[in-house]
Length: 127
Image (cartoon, rainbow, N blue to C red; front, side, top):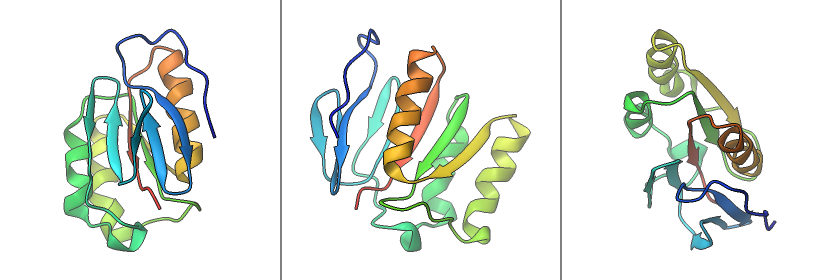
């Protein structure tokens, strides 16, 4: 799906997504990635939800953000509780929400939050 750009000049915006890719600022990424308004970490070495570990989610806990969006690929799938628990506990202490959804929904939600002037972090699994 192609998304229309807004007025978030100079900030990372999802400009498209589909099976096997996410476009950020019109640059195609075919590997999983971590995205916030000012930085992009790609590739993020996650192939699918089953390959997620607490260690791979740990960098999300150190980001200054309003919300963490975890895009789990083509379908919404929840990581194992032992994998997700450390991130949930850390973000709860910081009063930051963690939302798990499919990657397409995470892309749309990220852009909406950006348009509202909020500071989201999206960890997107690309399948």
